[in-house]
Length: 302
Length: 276
Image (cartoon, rainbow over all chains, first blue to last red; front, side):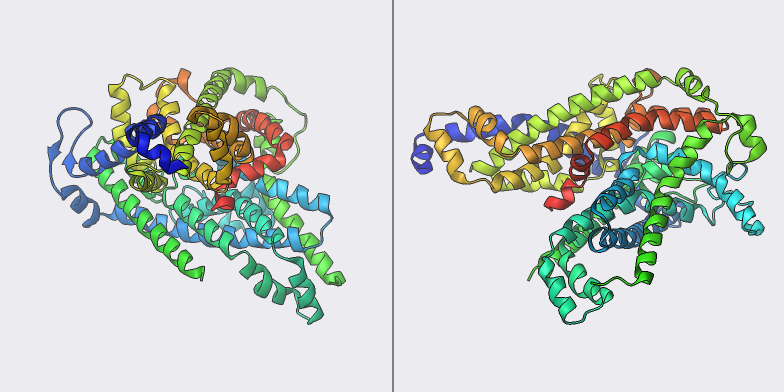
């Protein structure tokens, strides 16, 4: 059927395809693809944002990598952030989802819990930042008040976000608070798809609850698990909003991640070449990891 | 399975603890927004106010330009959603039902876009928009936001369109429908559930988008809700009750939408993972 048409107007048909694709493609090329490639070029130049770009080869990458403590801080923080986000909220989400789907809660209650767990995901990050900055505040914050009440006075005078030792932990807690609900919802949806008869059969065989979880539930949601892990990893690598709104990378540079480092270098110090080099390194790392993950996933299908 | 009493207690306590962990920050925002600064200073954060004070809300509303921020966010969201839906439908349609020269290359290039973080494009984008005289207009948010949604949206819609029976398209063509008619009258109604999910996903991402407007917008009159709220936060950080009131002003409309469309919103916001 189609072939007949193809022969009489191959060129015309290709033209129509391109015409229909043109708006989508143009937008993508102008605002995403070309800038993405330009960034690679900028990373090889010295440029203050105005005036000409001077070609400097790999020197931005050298500045970035060699003896640069800030880059290492950003790298370390990004890795910590990614590892924490890929484990703690995923574990909590798994626990929540298991309770919702397998905990034989009344249906309405389960729905209500899910609604609540997902709530932090819906509101803007800035709202979360306001609430948690207040909670952590050294003078007025409820957290230190609670610590004083329970008699842990020695910890109660810490400005949680102002102390280099605690700032990343404090930020990670906020991220756990935001992200768990997402994991919960995805896992719950997957768990509902698992054949109920498997559980019935297991019970006949005398399997305990934890047996059922490890042998039926967890294997049953493997696909969603991979997806959640990949998505979480992608989001974690490029995290910006929550850290910028809470600490702006501070105190000093102790909560720097790649995105903040690149933003500050690019837009506060006008070192656009260095900023571009930082972000190129981020993009490369993100691409390699997600490629590795999807490869593992494809293999896992057999 | 029979539930032992211990399991029941353990189940309910852990659910409640998790609910508490989620809700406490909201509770703190609520209580603090309804007291005066002096009251907070005197009684500490974990206490109920002597008297409920509503004045933080009008004060926050007057000091921040929230009506402007809401208007800007609405404009950006409406425009972005419209553009993304139309462009995703067009792109996914051509890439699902047609064979043409260079198709596979195009698909791989667009899919590469899913992996490009915003930082990778922000510097040249800033200068491109400056060159187009679009910097410090809402277009500087709408256009890149739309473009950045394209890879994911095309990927998503294509996934759904590929599941449609080919015969539907063929018969539409036999009946003499042209491409645009086939797309909008035959294909679009069939992928409506996916389209609704994409709409919600795009709307929420646009509404909450923070980094792009932070980079592109310097004028207060053009700030969107998250950026405006963040600016307000930095300006008035010592006045906690007023800040909490400002946060609540932002929460309330979103909460109403969420409570109205709960299941649809949850599905829409997790759409990527459900299809992937």
